[in-house]
Image (cartoon, rainbow, N blue to C red):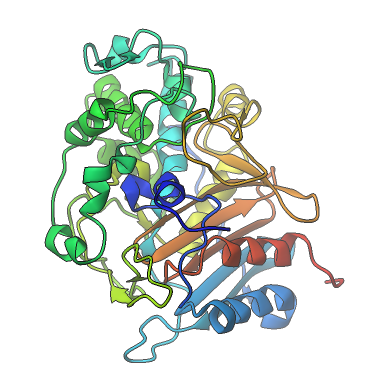
Length: 410
């Protein structure tokens, strides 16, 4: 795997919040969904020894500050950790910690859209022009030809605002310190994406181009269709009904509430031995509905268990969300994405090294990489997070392989 501006920008939300790709960083009515069942007792580490070894190897081998994983399967719930939450104090990683989940947020956003589809408040084949008249026009774009479905599965061809060179530069190295408290409106970021001189990645529906701009537009449509903010809809439809007490949308709030690991970042340094920075405190209005949520391993288990298990959407919308994913290798001028994946509506499928297929989503931002994946029925899930952004995607896929492709009988 290689490190490059284009690969990282393709993964990183708003040029900074990654959601996967072939990236290796430098070394060093569903609103009334049924409540989740009570959490099962945590299993001893011996129950998932290979996952624990993968966590230990992530810290020892890649220099990751700390990593956690939580598993839910037929035997109950297991939590494992390695390394530290804080390199200064040596505080160990804990099960209840909150962290930034990056583009894993997209699954939440898409679920709200699909609930509105189920309620017949909008249709997947509605055009962007219908809901946001005049917004997506010019520079090669025509909102009459781009549908909500295309936004959710990244087949719209719309340029990712995070890949805009001028915008990206504000998050690199010392510039990050100057701009980490900057606030952006959704309209500002959409405008950056649409105005980029590169224009569309491809004609609408003719490829896959991962773009956070798509999810900003989807959230603006949510607001237009409901008369409420995206955050209000998120809480009303998902966070509240599922009892996700560790999950929230911070908006421009720079600090992470409650117990959390420090988020350590190289700030996109290309130095082979980069300086590590504490990037925990920052305004993530640049990621909003595409990657701004804060959550925990347990809350992500609860959400994806409900989503994969069909408890958040009626069967018709469940089918639409999962059963016709786009080939992510057909991306035209877009940047590369995660190999061996296909992208549905806010969720993706990934084939692991042993041929097993898992479903879910993942994401990253400064100092935090997250994966939340599981079996198609939601009965076997793994959520993991690493609080350093130079370890790359490999440490997360290694943990997935350890759980879903075990080499020893468990």
